[in-house]
Length: 275
DNA sequence: AGTTAAACCTGGTTGC
DNA sequence: TGCAACCAGGTTTAAC
Image (cartoon, rainbow, N blue to C red; front, side, top):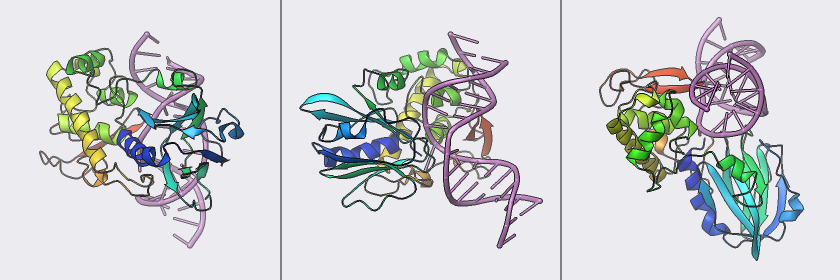
């Protein structure tokens, strides 16, 4: 599911409720992408600090007076977090429970591409290794049309692949990359390094607008995603191209196409998206 | 070094 | 109805 808007919606839903909560228990289900990296008992009695997000990762600081580390969470392809009191009995896809004094944070993830890993800090491994290669946050003021264009210039791969890689900006996954490219009038197969300054500026603006709009609507729910309170997203109803092959382009009327590119489906309009 | 394929895993949908 | 094939929001790791 989860691209940046879904992860941020999730963060907002758990940050306040979990602030200063005490960890009372940990329950592990089936293995996720990586092992937890710490004995579950070591987490008991720690307190939860402000929940942060970097790219599509969430950072749950745990401390005992002094910062002691935290949990780095990723929702993978089908993961979602819920926070509830009392917590329902664990189902077949509930693979991590953090029982706290303010409710149980539960990761439900059918495909188990998600992860919960302990790290001493964001600057230490494994967090540093996982976050180190990420590009800039989309709403970071330091990310400018100039720096974005420069980042695109360094890659020869198709622009769609570059967006998904997060090298130039993090947060746009398959849905929002398709939507942003359409909004900017850029063909997903366009070579990254051949995108002009003005078009790069337009693309950055499109990425920002797309992610911001998705955030407003609570993200996209294709199947699994819901926020920590169980509410589904609404952006999928506003998608202009994603999942709409064969339908007319809302901008120019040409029939939308689906093309597999770098083992991911791209949805685009051959009429108004140019290379 | 940069780009592309394979892998991880489950379940829903589609088509024969 | 049954079953195989294909598809799905991500990202690391291995292979060209």
